Image 1 (cartoon, rainbow, N blue to C red):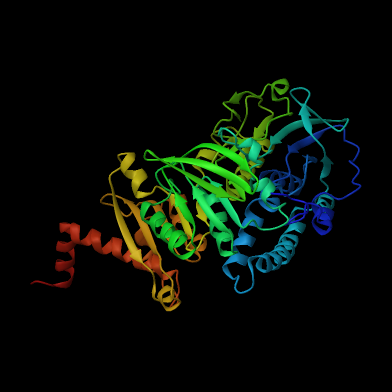
Image 2: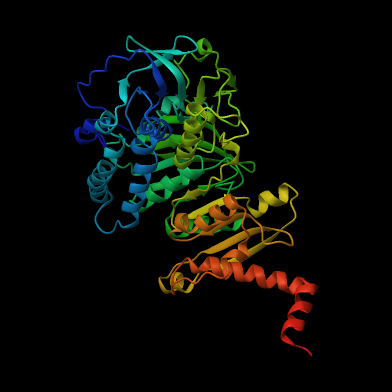
Length: 496
């Protein structure tokens, strides 16, 4: 497949003026920095902007574009594409693509100022473009400049990993890093990997008119999610969107053809071939640590990732790490939460028992932005069972508001057996990412589900699903509690 131009052009002047201004000249480095941040993605920007807001002398080093994966190749473009695809109607696939291209560029440009070089300059942050490398335990070199730091934050993110499939490299596989450089939507696309990235793109591209084949080596798509939620989404992908799905399937080899690529699949002893104009790989990510010379700073690796403790401190006590470079889950909001941990621990002098923030105590939800969406936090029923944790599962179906708008979905709660203590929650349906909030708050504070029962919410709204679920838990507890029933009879005189 030739790529003479760009679907979402790399040389987008409006975007580059914000995140990689042409003709940029790096500043003269100061004698000493309170914090040097390597990487201008979600974690790095929060670290730099937060530290500068406290009055710290801050330098930020970015090798490519500000905004990182989230703005340039991840959350922003993929969610914009999903929104555009969901409303695409009429015209040829190429016409829908042209409309998507224009809308996409407009929407990404609307968010880019938050991550811009001009904003950092106004905040007093010294911005250096180039490859950073440690030259010692407290020094970093970039484009001939030497930055001396009291503390440093390693926020370099991660990049798409390539699976070891014979012949795949010769097929020039796409990744999220290269997909948005396409000059046109391929007529057919094979996506390898049915995790969040693969599934979201499969649905969006199918709705834009691309013939999509999704191949997953595991037994099901989205193995981390609630099993029933996965089945709901799988039916939509196959029956409504026309995605060809192959699970429990291994790719034996890939071949380049005159018309694109051919994949040799093996499933349950059966061989088959899948042909497509292009192949996109979405099988995981690997940390961006190449060229950093971490060893010169005394930073050890744990496998591929920098070794960090629960305070996100590396084996060099001056250097912390945050975000995707520390490993999965690869979530923008997790990166931002990590950055706040780094700011508190790196910049404030506090004994461990008096205010050090711990990354292992963060409550991190996740949301799959498909149709229907799936949001989850804490344990799924499957995870609670595998961990041997006594639990009960409560399911509340869609609210009246959801039914009035023709939606399907549900709220599923995993509760510690015999209590109202929440262990996890899954929301399926439109606006699932917003509806997961009460679960995050309950898990963060430790409050019980029945604390939601007295809330009075507007009718009809989707959020009512939470008060209904809380009442269901409360009613179930009452049925199982003999002493509560005796107390009610005594207080009311019922049964006398």
